[in-house]
Image (spheres, rainbow, N blue to C red):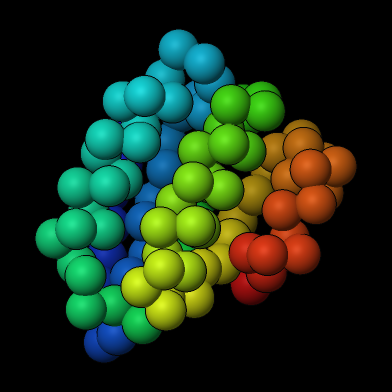
Length: 102
């Protein structure tokens, strides 16, 4: 699991690499929260999942948790780059209804 980020004006893109499952979600949560805390002035956060090779319901929970945290700060969150397999999990969970795909 690896997390990188890029700030572009008021937009923050968080790049997620590896697997988002029960084994890696705790580490991913800590890393993503650190990035979000360090870039608290962002208006939009885009989670780029193009580097995610596998995601299960634990990964969905991780993203919903970040969505709730960002919503409390009036920050919009989006998802981009999900693979076909990852996108199926996201669609089944209904995650695109709260974190639109861009």
